[in-house]
Each structure stands twice: as C-alpha cells, then as structure tokens.
Amino acid sequence: MAKITCSRCNQLIDSQAITCPYCRTEHKAFGHPGMTLHRAKGKSYLCESCTYHSDDTCTFPKRPLAKECTLYENLEERKQNIYDNLQTSRNNSSLKNFKIFNILKYWLQNNSTITLILLLLLISFLVVVYM
Ligand code: SF4
Ligand SMILES: [Zn+2]
Image (cartoon, rainbow, N blue to C red; front, side):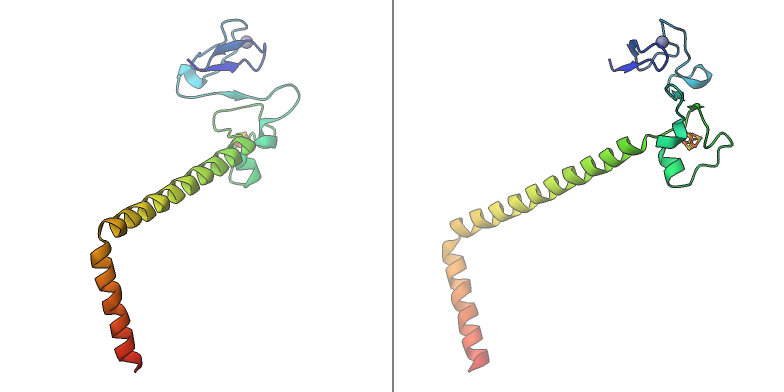
C-alpha cells in the first residue's frame, strides 16, 4: 500500500485516504478516491511548480495563486518521468538491435555453406558487371 505525507501534519498516511486520519485534512476532492486534491505546503502556491502554469495551458481562475487543486502536476516529476521513459525506450531499442544481430550471427554460423555460395555469386556478379 503506497504512503504519502500529509501536507498539513506531515504524518505518513495511505495514498488512497480521503481524509488524513490524524488532522482530518481532506486529500481527495468530493470524497472520490480517484480525485487527488493537491495542497500547497506553507506559504507557497501550487502553480509555482505546476506543469500547466509553466506551459501556460491552465485556465483555472485560481491560477497563479492556487493553494488547492485537483489538476496539479509537478513539473519536476513530469520531466523526470519523460527522461525515465526515454531511457527505457532507448534501452529497449538497443536490446532489440542486439537480438537481431545475434539472430543474424547465429544464422550465418549455421548456414556457412549457403553464405559462402551467396558471397561467391555476389563477387562473380560484381566482376561481370565491372569488366
Ligand atoms: S492546474 Fe492548478 S496548480 Fe496547476 S497552474 Fe492551474 S490552478 Fe495552478
Ligand atoms: Zn494530516
């Protein structure tokens, strides 16, 4: 079960908790477990670190002084996720290339006669073409 820190009392609580069991702060909007209500800590505002403020796509009237928001997305976390996804896709693609190379190598080792004949044919063809 994932844990989060309560933005008001800093106690560790269940990430699905609708209200904090220690200070009763609401963590889900409209009592819905799937709708996280993000809260700013201290005197800061959520918009300062929000992706939608950074790319100027937010049209909420509370912007740029939102202390609570259901749409908040942390800019640094988003950048980190994009970076992690890029790294994963690069690793997958090099793994795929490695597999293709190994299959080709395996095939050439097991079909050396055919490979040799094909090479001779290719050399003969090139000699005929360029003579
Ligand atoms: S989505 Fe919420 S936190 Fe983000 S910029 Fe808009 S009002 Fe601010
Ligand atoms: Zn709390």
